[in-house]
Image 1 (cartoon, rainbow, N blue to C red):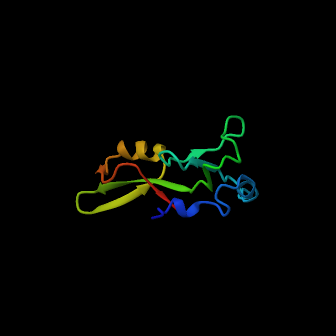
Image 2: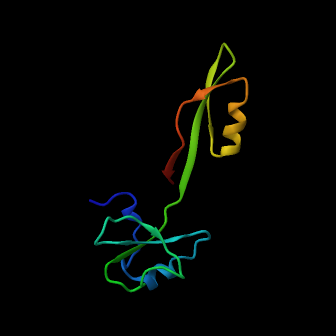
Amino acid sequence: MLTQRDKNILPGGRDYETAMRLLNEPGAVLQWRNTECSGCWHDFQKDDGPQPLASNLDWRIKPKTLRYRVALFTNGNEHWPETTRNDGTATLWESGHLFRKWLTDWTEVEV
């Protein structure tokens, strides 16, 4: 059964040339995995990457991720959650008098 990440495998599967033609999106990162091993994806590095035409490789565009954390705030009478996506804001919130606790750890989701 294909996972959500596997659905991003490029048309042509092991066809490196097809993969490179599809890399026209700004910030796109090409990834590869060895289909004979664990199946973990690795970012492609031109200098030290795998052999492009190896028959045991799959290629894909790396999925974009969103990282966030949810905090609980209170002013004594009211309680509300807030979401942040960066460490600087998280640190600032922790030192504020309305901050109570983190409702989640840092979470990453594919978008």
